[in-house]
Every structure is written in C-alpha cells, then in structure tokens.
Picture 1: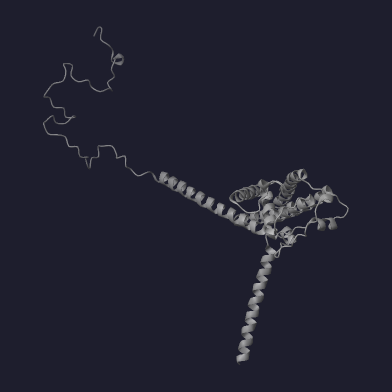
Picture 2: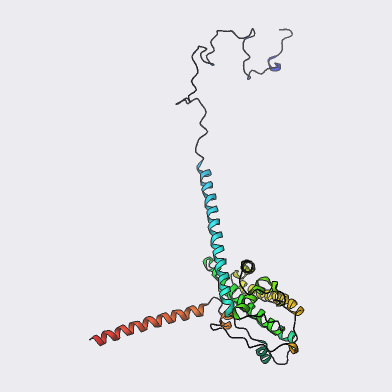
Length: 334
C-alpha cells in the first residue's frame, strides 16, 4: 500500500507489551491474564505449591559457599588461639629471664684487673665485648646446628633457648661494663640485677645520679619493655632456623653483630658518667649467687640437653637404688 511503513521500520517492536485496544479499555471486559474482575478480594496469603512462581530467596547457600565460610571461621579461631599461645609463651620467657638475672655471675673490677693485668678501661672493655660477642655467636651457631633438619614443633623451644642464653651473656657483659667504668648501681644482688635487666631491655646504660634511669624494682613499664625486647630478639633470630647448617652461620654472624651494637650503646652512655679508677672509692667485692649459672653450659649447650640428660641419669640411678633396696628387703625377709 502506498505510504505504509514497512514492518522493519515500525516504531514499536512486536516484542514489547501490547498497548491495548485502539479505542481504549473496554470496561466490563474480562482479561484472562489479569484474573477475575469480580468483587472477591485477592488473598494476601503466600501461595503454596505454585510451580510457576519464582523460587524463594531463603534458599540455603551453595555447598562451596558454606565450606568457605567454615574455613574462614576456623582460620579466625586458629589465629585467636595462636595469638593467645604466643602471648603466653612470651610471658613465660619474660618470667624465665627475670628469674635467671640474679643467677648471672658478675666479676667485680678488682677481679677483672687481676685477670687482665696492664689494661686500661677501654682496653678491658674491648676484651669483655669481644668475649661476649664470641659467646653469643657460639649460641647462635649451636641453635642453627640444632635446626639443621627443622622440626616445626621444636622451633619455638629453640628460639626461646637462644634468647635465654644470649640474654644471660649480655646481662653479664652489661654488669661488668658498669664495673669497668666505675658506675656500679647501688643496692643488693637482686636490685642490681633488676637494674641491669632494665638496661638490657632499654639498650642503655644506668646513670645512678638520675633516679629515672635507675630501676631497682620490677614494674609494668619494665616488663612491657622487656617483652618488646624479647620479641624483637626472637624475630631477629628467625633466620637461625634455616636448615642445612646455613642457620648456624647466619645465627653466629647475627648474634655477634647484635651483641657488639648493644655494647656500643651501653659504652656510649657509660663514658658520659665514667669515674676514673683513681677516684673510685673502695667498693665491697661482689657476692656470688648461691645458684649461679654455669656460663660454659649456657654457651655450649643453650638447649640444656646436658642438664636434661643429667636429670634423666639421676632418675635412673634413683630407680635402680629403689629396686636394689626392695630386693635387699625381700632377701632379709627370707
């Protein structure tokens, strides 16, 4: 027909909804798709057993999604438990070092001058630092050798043993450096060991003229700094656990370097308040702790295996003595 629009150029596509009759809606007509136009009210209750309706939104999550949620929850729980165990282990190690501090044997100035005759304060301090660095390097090498074939459950024990051994050696070094520079802190054995422990955790020397730098009693601030110092040392000691004896070399080098850095900081502070030997008052000799640590065992056996073997031998001897005693009693009864 002339003037008609071709079907493909029509404005409205046939896929769209029907606009209804041209002459408008027919009132009273029944639309089967819209349902009845009667006066009955439509029910608001949810329709049941209707297969033509969309599925409910309350559909359980897919198996993969539920499994991923369970894994995330287990990971969070594992992280919480791991953090609690780490804090408990750190607190135990802190208490262990606090208990060991009074047991560290310290040589007084007179003893050091007898052992190293003819040396001045700086030369004597150099000797002490070199000996302590060699000892901590030996501890690091021993832990690295023990971790040649790493066993994950034993790694925290090895790290704790290294930190404890290094702390004992460096506490001894700090105490003897204070003797060499003539600035022994006042107080008894326990008070001095607490002051040295504070110096080790803060990596600074003790100035007896300033009460703020002299701590003779443990407090929350000192324990917090001590925990931070132990954590820092454990993180630095992680490379010592590299297998195949690589950790032994790394541990020896790192411990030697860390001990020298600590000694340099302590000596820098002590030089500012140094008292010449000629001006020193006669100080009493340092008492030796009743249960002093054997520094040779700390250096050569940081894991305490020799001590453990000794305890096991003592237990075996005790059991054997008990068996012999029971046998003798039976023989006497016969």
